[in-house]
Image (tube, rainbow over all chains, first blue to last red; front, side, top):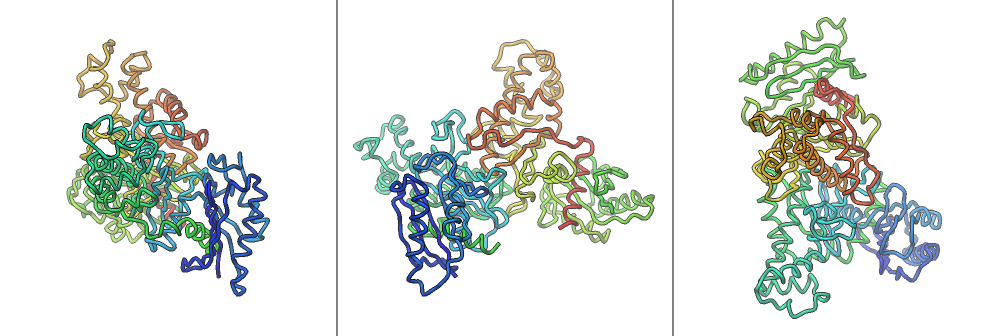
Length: 316
Length: 316
């Protein structure tokens, strides 16, 4: 048995055919902005899936899972997604179901990542965990008792929008001081820019235009002993740890997985995160939660997450 | 059919016989510190339940629910409770089960309150809600998809220990800036004391020793137009709203119920809380969550919560 996992992004939509072991049997992609009309997009998705399974010796596809920004698990709608061309509320799940005749289930990318981790990754066998995806923003998926938390609205699990510094940095959500304005690739860059004004130390990063500084360049500078880069990563780890500590009092997970672009900094980030979590966690939870890297490869994770959603839906 | 609900507190242990409609058919209490040995306490509990049902025309008791501080739902242990005489880890649930031969289930007081609200109170029919009990501290019970969140450890749902002001007020948990150091009866008093130093306004509260100022006196002063009391309640509401807004991004509840001593201030507190929640909530959740008073009477709620736990356990 096989399913299709679809990861819809503002730039690319990646489609993969995935078996129950998490092997991606075939994969293709579409350039999302090439389809300003959602009807055309749905047709292209259906055609791509057909061509991906056509060489599959007749193995039947059982269902489709979709990870997409601003996707509502309950309604199957994409709602007001700022990075997609389709405006307003798009009933994508229903449209793909109608076109393909297959069961279709959809959630946002971070929730899909959590399911991918649970079914194919490092959270196998865990019933209570959280995944944080540190990219441009901070996405999160929360699993409690083996189920992703969707909440009353379908939009639960927005740890990136915990306010950790009231009145602090401006956030894309229109508020101030959200965790993701500090603990994300973008947040790390903002911290370096702030430290340029606070610290007098020399730094190779001062020779790059602000708009060209990236989390990767900061991690590289830190590995060479750059004091501003090192301080910025330490501060980012401290705020991320605050977000983790505040999540732990809520749901007491067994593990928090760190994923996404910024997570590729590896132990240079995770080491200090663990130190600050241990220092600042409520005593009753001390030693009960592990901070771990994701068990999935960055390049496969989105499609595997969407496929995991399809498998979870079929096995219900 | 009937169950027994037992609310264990540092001062009193209240025992009630409760039917499925939430009627307390009979009730009695024990003075908890009169039993320094837990064996004696368990014997007294069993004897009290027997005497409470003895006039009950042979109606059989089906189970026992216990709400207790620092109770672990999974293990049935009370662990390191600072306000009880029994030190260390006490396997209370098992001891009561052995003594009475009945199914016994135990959780902490705030989780029991959440179940009481769901089964007998204002959360009937709700699957996603949070209850906050504002007393000496801030206790919380989180319900997601119709189930109380216990987490990996059994101690989940500690919203009172969200750090909302890193480096802020000293908390009983040994850390600083926890929500309950601001949003609780004790926190409100601390805020008045702080405002004595910040504001120049006259206040009747300045004529009372700091150790005698209570949340009730502050609410009374506020209702008479006392500027420091009014400012203190507004500030408390603002921080409580921050805790609520940060909880909503996590689990997206349909309602947050406010309960306990400080909640008796009523609309004088809830009005500003709603205003600040509406102002500071992430846009996707605006208008999706109600801030409501508990539907249970303060005097009955603890026993009803424990009884609700017993009913929930029997109906599993």
